[in-house]
Image (tube, rainbow, N blue to C red):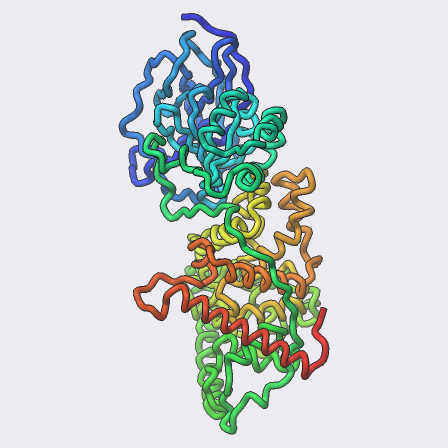
Length: 635
């Protein structure tokens, strides 16, 4: 066996193969690393090597080009099961094993058990897509039409891999699929011939190709999306064919199926201009919305006014009880008196349940004892800067403790989870009443209780939805975050968990929450708030040397530095921009509530969109009316 001189060009750990999670006799993820190795005078190959988990003493497999052990595992299943688990930060032990080569030049893909090699000269195409909380995966396809198993980059690195590959090949973005890249050799004749085949160039196109060859890094890798737009606008005649080397070509190798539930969102969607949005004045009238019996005559109008400008402090105590479901909108004054009496009795019955538990009983009730311990710890550090909760032996702290303990009796399955004290304190501050704050809390928890469930599925789903929105709005920002291992948007977790409670001042939170409680213009408006904040920071993030740690640090340091009115204007403008897009991806429509799968005509996407448009039009009209009556709008 002849060993050739090898040069390691690129290496990246944290690359995984996802097997079928339903099979109990296999790992659901196979950890490994990818590297580009240059065999002097022979070839350049991309190699993927399996690493061993835990303390296993087995060496990683050697990569060979002689076909030894090279039969493809017929039991392999790419396994597109979602992987929500947090990746351990403990570095896996791995020996640096040299690459063995037989000296033969392989013209096909060589696979061993979970390890394989592909000469770059044999690479036909590369598909780059995003799945599972923003992680990238790549699919390589050889010129023989054989797709390799998808490679999942749990720790980022796809951008660096593409940069390294560009030393040896040109990756030309497909004009019809923004995530598909076709591989060409660094040969101007071959590339020009490929352009001729695609009929991309007119008579004056050769100079452009020449510049393209002279500086491939700037024109190709410097911005794949820009390359696509450049060639589409400058080189391709309007009626020329662009399908001669796409999936519509019968000779084009079949690509592996996309991940279930994954929808490609490319930069090709034209969102149009983002409209200017103004905020209105806080709602300062209440009695005029009540009929003689005390019923609210126009709840939707009240919600529109609250969404547009919030509520004046003297009306919050009354209006919040309607927004949070303590009082029905159609209840009379007499009915509300009866509701308050019944709810008061019910509250104190539940409070007596935990108050009457003796110390001896509690010693045998570890769950209740655990809830009490968590509550006492959190109460002692919740909003202590606010005069209502400041100082020692403050009655406000006692009320905070008692309401949270009583909620454990109301919802013992959920009990108490850290963060719930943050939700209660503004309610208690506004209502100044133990009973009313409790029932307002139950109404609030109806909206966010899934955030606190142990499975965290709701939080994972919201982070995924946020990623979908951000990708449609700002693919460049998404790609940057992805390149810095921040594509999961995990730094937004606290924002979504307690609805930005610790990001804005106490007074701003009162305004933000009442705006969100209107559920206008959509139920996921809090995700648009997050998008608005992230886009406001894109210049600071992209134009710097941030990595994962410094991105997290920067986001955390935004606390108390954000302008709420600017964020709200930005979020509403984003919503209006998205709903005006005629080709909005289905996933984005679902996040915004514009499309709900239904067989009825009433729930069709068109009717959903028109209903949303109507609400916003009325909101804007309401803002204009409010502005004319109350003076100029706030900045």
